[in-house]
Image (cartoon, rainbow, N blue to C red):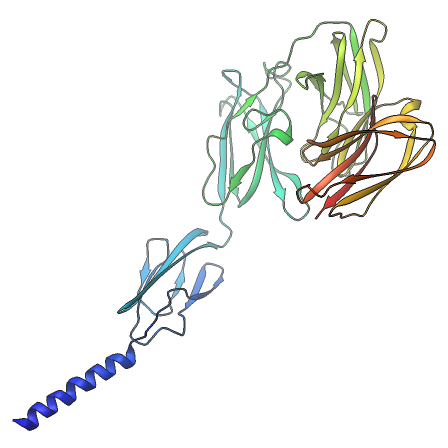
Length: 401
């Protein structure tokens, strides 16, 4: 009997020793993983003991209890997998979001002119390029009587987008309502950005802005100097703004790059050129009984900006603007040559056209130098403008890091 009891005690102690050998004092749920195409391979943390139990939830409705499973997803998308481990008394939990393949989503909405569905026309889809901080048109959707002013972009990849609606000249609302961005903006710098990361962005409606009313005998016309390789001279959008920056009228350039505003009431205005993704520097004009026909407005479009000015001898008073260091961290220096003594405005704008600082500067005949403190600026791209009352005289792009 004693021998049997002794054998039983030895057997129990053996089981306990084996259990302790296969159990881990700690356990780690976080695995390592590798993704290739539609397949993910998991490798459990080596610190987990042989007796650790695993539970994988792959985020697509399927599961596994393998230690280091391999899983193939049925379609591209964004998934959140979770791993639970248990090696009593230890338990741990880990989750992570992953992207499989190149998931495609959608952006949809309606275009309204007041309370009416607006058509015919089209909606442009712009995508943000993180590499160079620019916006590029990537797709177009038509607005027709069939879709009742509804637009839809399918197969949209993850990223940041903007949408802009433009009516055709055959639309009943063409001259009465301005082109616009989601949701109520007339200028790209004030439009709402649509973020696409996991799922469709629906009901991104565009509400077009109604033109203001003005009556007078004033006229303003000008021409585009196009240095932008990817832009045609025709159909560039030009806005007439009042002294409160409200839109009074809009037009587009013709095939030769010319534009005209008519029937302008007396007052102070700005000529503003709308080009998605480019910084715009407007020009100031004044309409009066003595000066009601302005015909020398010049718009220069480059790869990075749109500069509008009223061409006369005074706009040639400065040249050779050099900004350094570039990129900058605390201060930028500006060198410029002037043909006369004059007061100018030194403005710094961000890439949306928002004015960050504006200072009056007196420049003298010959070489001039001044500095601008940018230590409080957020990292990004900015434009330094030298202005007079006729518009932008010189400008230079710089970066703050």
